Length: 176
Image 1 (cartoon, one colour):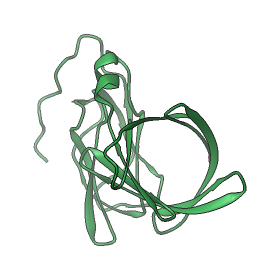
Image 2 (image 1 turned 120 degrees about the vertical axis):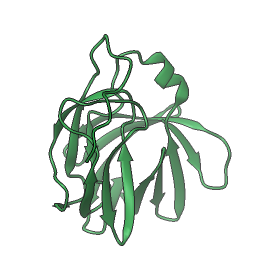
Image 3 (image 1 turned 90 degrees about the horizontal axis):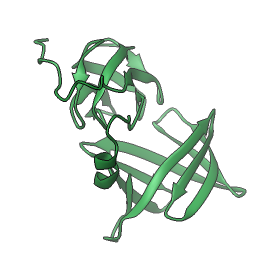
């Protein structure tokens, strides 16, 4: 992913290296950071790093993720170069709820092949609809929610797996 700070046009490479419970290890530019993230009920949480605690909130919009950490705001965008290098890789194995909400629409079924950017599920939180999409080409391994279901922040909505080697196209759209 690429990271951009609000008001700054420079892009910095950002990558989640590992997650273990509430501990997350990330690489931002040339720095590697380890922090603890404790989610809260409003879709945000507290990020703790080096003895300091920061309120954090994030929201996904189309092909970006907007995050505010304390007084700073950031935008994460898919790294196009990384997507080109990844032939059968998977950017994200799970689609998770960025905040507590209600599932309005499930746009895929188990076994569907999807392309990067394809909408997968629509949730409503704080009277706003958010469409969550695939970050890379994938196969829908398992849809874990249904329309009308209430979900917590971080709940796994859809599990994905790498697409079969022979697939270059998504499955035919299904009427819902």
